[in-house]
Length: 319
Ligand code: HEM
Ligand SMILES: *[C@@H]1O[C@H](CO)[C@@H](O)[C@H](O)[C@H]1NC(C)=O
Ligand SMILES: *[C@@H]1O[C@H](CO)[C@@H](O)[C@H](O)[C@H]1NC(C)=O
Image 1 (cartoon, protein in one colour):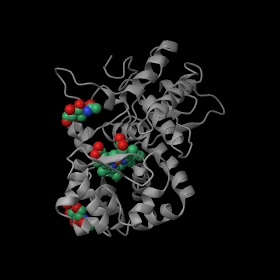
Image 2 (cartoon, rainbow, N blue to C red; image 1 turned 45 degrees about the horizontal axis):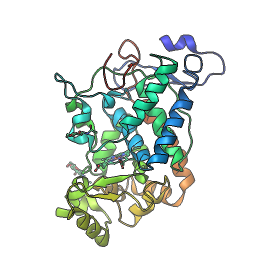
Image 3 (cartoon, rainbow, N blue to C red; image 1 turned 180 degrees about the horizontal axis):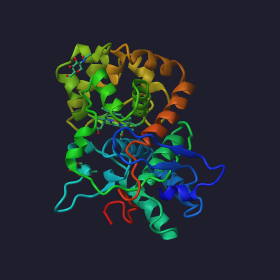
Image 4 (cartoon, helix red, strand yellow; image 1 turned 180 degrees about the vertical axis):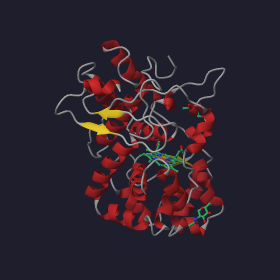
């Protein structure tokens, strides 16, 4: 593996044990220390400026990393634009209003100026998500790097994203297929401490409330969702009361039946997940710690190495 030649004593190495037959790759904290030492700084600075302009962009960047990793692995496939021959992941209805592409473009351009063809788009997304969490008041963690960019981005692959209508067992299964535990699924759902959902994502709860999925949902809150939907499919509701702050109020909201999506509130309906929600609702430090760990694991899903991946020059196009 090409990466091995770059390791030296004292470097932190994360060896990935990938489930399935996919080729493994190893990710390293100092992967760009020699070839592009400014990469981390450039991403952090670009994300910082973007968040100064629009605080809500942090949510977009966090969600982008999740979508990237869940579809075809963390390989930047989410960034590819459609062409006349290929409809890309981006154009799926499941892209559900993904935001922040221009932030990744900006960081990539600045990085290409300094060290062309070295830093992958997949790594830039992983770093940007990390920085978005930090600048929103969330935990700080280091991101191991060395992901290569994939060469496939197909609209149909987005069927692999979990649906907002999933119940707890379906969510556990979807995350389990990527080597993530029920507890990791719950803590990663805590990403919904940032951002908003549109009515089209929760209107299933407004029209026919399913008590099995709903668990302990709150009649008053359902009325709030309903009133948002009266303004149309694109009307938004914040996932928790502190929309741009990364904190544990998402979990406190679930305990009060104020989860926005079915897939949020269902975490209170299953004995496999309810206790974990309670723990994070009462202990923000453990949420922050477990979230960091789970993000590191999410960031290893389906990671590609040469020859199955490369470093794109433009994140929107295959080389
Ligand atoms: C558990 C399964 C998950 C489902 C079913 C799900 C589904 C959704 C849906 C439907 C939306 C709203 C999209 C819209 O209406 O425009 C959304 C937004 C969001 N999701 Fe998830 N998600 C899940 C897990 C995650 C994870 C693991 C993360 C990150 C760690 C994440 C981060 C976000 C963020 C930050 C937003 C807000 C985006 C914005 O405001 O632009 N989600 N998610
Ligand atoms: C998401 O997909 C829709 C089509 O379903 C498309 O119109 C929209 O431009 C896409 N959004 C992004 C940001 O690519
Ligand atoms: C979750 O959904 C699946 C598929 O619709 C269903 O078979 C299962 O019984 C549901 N589980 C619960 C606990 O509602």
